[in-house]
Length: 582
Picture 1 (cartoon, rainbow, N blue to C red):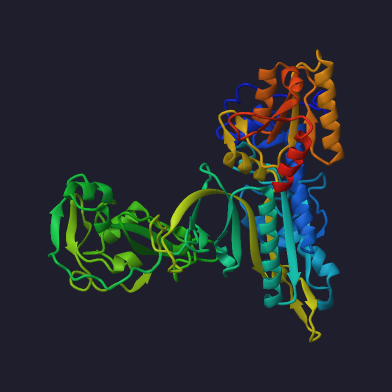
Picture 2: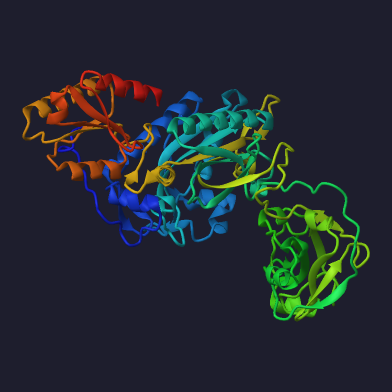
């Protein structure tokens, strides 16, 4: 490609609504252009990156035995009504009607449609296993689309769906996809982690997220540097405290704490570590009748160390709370505790509540909690003496950096990540809801065991930019760059020697299959270099009269601080060796 034939449109300033680096740089580099909230045109430069992502994904999916197809973007609502998702999904699901008044949706994913296809086409166990995938446009009506391609409403995703005869076979398919995803992300050339993720209502342990490491990532990734343990914050287990509970040393005392309604304020006021305080979180569960009306409510008290935070996913799995919970109202709190929030604790309740104690709190002595009276806390509280031993002890907190790893092989570290892929074992959730079955070996119908596997095709370039950029612009890995090499001739329009050398190198690289662009626009060197540094092409060759007279050209990788002079005759070989190594 020659730059004069391509479309290059760069900006010096990012638009005012571009909040994150990837949005700013991709817009400035002319890769994306906003059409509406969360809706972007993929400009020629950006489309080349997306196509490279798609090619790698497609090659590895095909290598793993998946079969490509394409399902409709607009889908009849009746299939989504079969699974209940038409009613259950919120406004993120875009619902439309045609001229006949029939309901349709603009799909964010295609479990229903692929399951309908399978129940018609896969009739026997002899046709299994099967894995179907597509690379296709999706739509999710985000409440607040932002961050460019990181959280858009319209996006491109690779979604795949496996069908197996039983759970054991489904787990084999799952592991095959997990391995394929590792090959895909290895080829992208990005720093990433595959982390254990929560499986939600389906349960089980077969769920992994693929996170690109970036300081701006929305997700917290927990890992152990000394082992293979890695999980997202929702899934990460806080290891059980070591050793027995220490003996109580102090008497319980009702202590004035005027105006100190948070654990941090109380600890500072009393001059004690925050870890000696216990916070009280009050939840409620509701029992509903068939009309959806609240018949009665149950109040729950959760006790966590003052320097820890509640993990809602863990709490949502506890017996009694797994039906769904909410934070209690102020009237509910006052009727059970006799105090307003800020001074709550487990001692001296007006009405009984269900108490859940985090494992770290269960082994504490001489701790501090609210006295259920404004401006007062209890100090020196100990289990067994001042209140009964807890009935339910569970891991209900987020882990923190420095916690022991659950596998016992070190301590935990935390870094930020951007989720760009997810592999998930579905089981029979969709096949049973849609009566999708096949004839098993015993001649009886059995529901398909399913898995689903997604990669955010358009989100991934944005994540790559968040991980790889500097003050000058983007720095693409070779595998994802819109062009791998750019040739920058200085004064090509004025020097026959420069023009000849540039076109000869250009032709040689093209013949060797290198993805190269020749900048023949006649731009000044400063403007030309600024464009390609912003766009982030990883390898640049600069050709000028002065260096040619010395039999040399200049090579510079996008991460290098300065160019290196190389012999004109050697530059093509050097480039090819570097690209092969990458």
